[in-house]
Length: 142
Ligand code: HEC
Image (cartoon, rainbow, N blue to C red; front, side, top):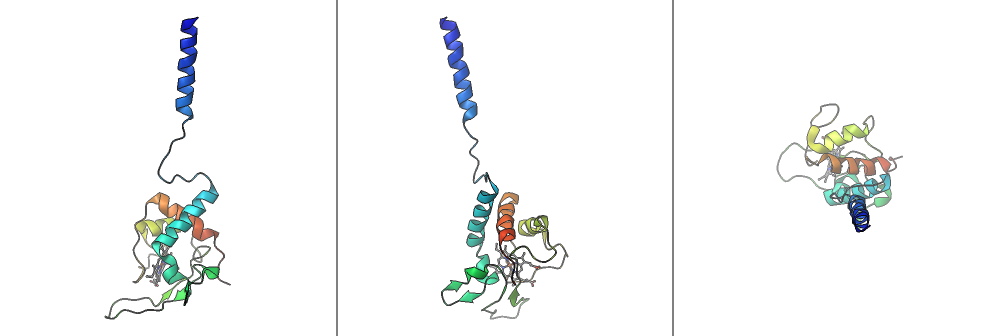
């Protein structure tokens, strides 16, 4: 009897252990979580500083990532793109995978190099997937 109880106890223990959820860093559980995680990363990456029209109080988030003319220019001569294109809802003709490739450092699908001041991000695949989910969820410019 005691043996059977001990065995039961052991089984319960094992079950309790396997019931503990794997706590990975920032593991997104749902599509909603992924978008929220991406929104956070896009804010951290400063994407809105260039890709969203600027107002005296900051980026106009009612048109988030819908593209903007930059409000600044370099002091020295250098390669320069004066406009940050619209990326909300993904750039025209890009798939989500194209965006993930781009954000992990793989360049544009067309192969055309990206000019400064666009930073060359080398995000992890997981972070790029989260940012892509958020960017894809945004309404495109009208
Ligand atoms: C300092 C300004 C700046 C910041 C910050 C910035 N970008 Fe850009 N981005 C640009 C400019 C300017 C271009 C256009 C470059 C060119 O024409 O070669 C660009 C191009 C791009 C493109 C290519 C779009 C296309 O149609 O080819 C993507 C995608 C992009 N940016 C995404 C992002 C994301 C996502 C972030 C934040 C994680 C970000 N950018 C942050 C300025 C910026």
